[in-house]
Each structure stands twice: as C-alpha cells, then as structure tokens.
Image 1 (cartoon, helix red, strand yellow):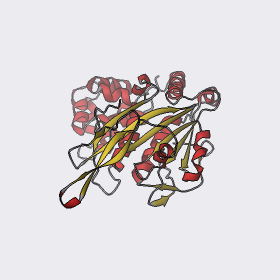
Image 2 (image 1 turned 135 degrees about the vertical axis):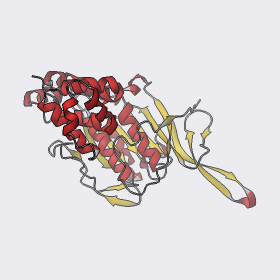
Image 3 (image 1 turned 60 degrees about the vertical axis):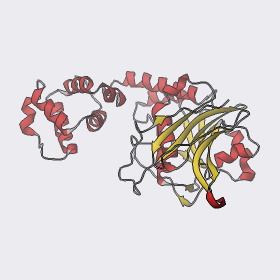
Image 4 (image 1 turned 90 degrees about the horizontal axis):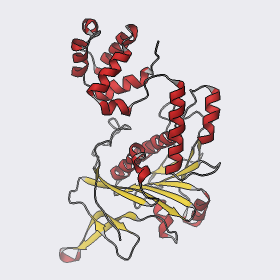
Length: 350
C-alpha cells in the first residue's frame, strides 16, 4: 500500500484549488461521490480540505485525488512535490538539488558555506523562528548579535531563503543523512560589518547581500575600493522650477564606460535586482531594490527561480518590477506572496 506525504497534498489543495473545485471533485469523480454528503461545505476552505483528505485516506483514494489534481492544475501539482513517501526517491532528489545549489553558488571543496549579510538600518530585532521543523538547533549557525533591518519583510525573506538553500533533511533515516552530509550546505546569517572591517567579508567565500541602496552595506562593498556587481539602485535627480530637485528611484550601471538609468513611470512600483558577480575567487550575490518591496521580491525571485538561473553566465543580473506593498502588517505576507507578481524588465549595460 502506497504511503503519502499528507502535508504536501494538503498544501497542493490549499494553493491550487477553490472550494468550488473540491465540490466538483466530490460530485463528478469516481469514488468521491459518497463524500459529498459527509463534508461541511458551508465551512471554511481549510476544514473542507481536512475532510476531503480524511475521506481520501480512509477510502484509499489519495492516489486518485492526486491524479485529479495533476490533470486539473499541473503547474501547482509539480510545484508542491513530492507526494509519495518514497525515501529512496527523496534521497536522490535531495542529493541532486544540493549539488545544483552548490553549482549555482559556486561552492567547491569541503567548505560548502554561504554567508548572508543583512541590511543595517533603523531598528534592531532578533531573527524570528517561523517553523519548528525549519532548521534544528544543532544545525543552525547564525550570529548571536541582533539584526538591524529595514523591515520584517527582509527578515522573513532571509529566513525562507536560508531554508531553501539548506534544505533540512533531519527527518530522513540517519544513514541517509550521513550520505547527504557530503553535499550539505550551511548558511550563516550575519550583520554587515562596519566600513573599517569590510575586509572581513573577503574571507567568507560565497556571500549574499540583502538590502536597499541606502541601508545595505553590501553597497559599501563596491563603493569603498571593492569591485563587485554590475548594477545597483540609485536616486535619479533632475532640476525643476525654482531650482528645486525632484528625485526618483532608479537603477544604474556601475561597469562599462557609461551610466545608463532605468526609471519607472508609475509611483506605485518598485524595482528589484538579482545579480551574481565573481570578484577574484569570491562569488557575490546581491539581492536589493529601490524599496522594501523591491528587495523582498528580489529575494523571493531567487528562492523561486534559482533552478532557471543555472543556465546564466557566471556574472549576470536580472531587473524586476513589482507593485509597492501598501499593507502595514504582515497578515497577508507569505512565501508565495511575490510569485507571478514580478515582471522582468530590460536593462542593458555596455
């Protein structure tokens, strides 16, 4: 009898289907008709999903449920895999994913570590623990110092990025964990050093900078006699009546013989930058934007699309355009908040 990862099946139903879709499942699909009278259709979507899953498990119909979901919404189906509790298959998939991540971040030899530097700005706060299963305490490596951050959005995106890279496998059998430790990646979270200590970064191997143009000391990395990066956020200024100046967020090239500016026409948009650069033997990844929304979306873009970016040149950059968030709370902010909200925009440096 097949075993299934019920949590992933539940996520698939939550993210990929409406209450109406589930009602259609129980009305039309063979084996599910008897469930129609057993499910509280007037209840919330979460309760309906629990009842559908319970019925499917009790009647050995989870496989049928997954076949229906794959046919109706193949994109979502592939996104939330695996569903079969096939340990060998999961082990092979985890090994391939970790090797591919190592390739993307240029991790070589025994030192498979990445350091993420967060912005230093405004307020001090400790990094939150979002899920009990994300990273076991004995595997987590982060500075004991509190983090100075622009917003909670950056903190959340950093936690999710760390989890995406490390891919915890503590629930697998011990012998498989030992085998996969050969391709394990450790992500260390640190605050950016002061200007006088900027040379400490050069000893860190692969580094990721997260933050905006004014808050991010990653910008300092190439402003103060350090060559790294191809583009960066800036402010575009032009004179207007009576000698006043009007400023607007923009991005600029910092390589080549000229500077080219890209500026967006609407006030309710932000730009995000995703770039990878090789500085000597060090790989540097910049995730930044013209505002908090731009930065958050840039991190999310890397989390969701790093597989697609494997084909890019060693040095590359992407520029995305996203709506500026208006909400002042985080009630609607989750790991998939930016998915399909970004638009890649053309930007060329010589």
